[in-house]
Image (cartoon, rainbow, N blue to C red; front, side, top):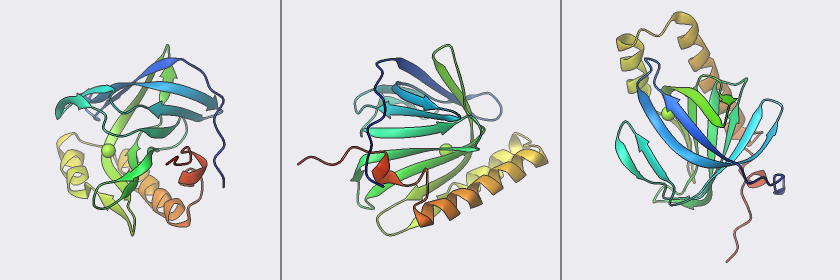
Amino acid sequence: MPYTAPRMSTSTILISSTKFDGSPHYEYEAELLGCDGPLVICRIHAGVPWTGYRGSGLARYDSTALFFTDRWYNTQHFHEPYGEAQRRSYTNIGLPAVLEGGVLRWVDLDLDVMEDRDRTWVDDEDEFEEHRARMGYPDDIVAGALAARDEVLRLATTGAFPFDRASHVPPLVR
Ligand SMILES: [Mg+2]
């Protein structure tokens, strides 16, 4: 699918995520590009400050993030592939997002799916197992997270929405 620019709006929202036990995951501001039913589209600008459980810093790359109020994942498409692996997209498995009063909240469940130049793969399965035990994820949370992981892998390997990255990132201008 060719890229179609989202309807532009200028509102800034705070993206705030926690771990399952309520401890901080990440917080940063993003530009809300639009909402379409359960889909919330944001632009994360390189240079925006973030704070999180690993400290704080500045976003290194421009990306477009797609959050859902009815899916157990969100995905971030980098406008330009980066690094040795040429990372294109990063998907967090987590509870569905809630957008309210300018804050988009979601709960991270550790599992991540990476899309690199030559492979799509699951990261942090060890962290998922560790937190599942330590934070006591209920069975339905574990089942939901694993089903989301499988759905993401299935959709991402075929390039189906929302993993049709080219439809969401601006064309590269060089
Ligand atoms: Mg994650």
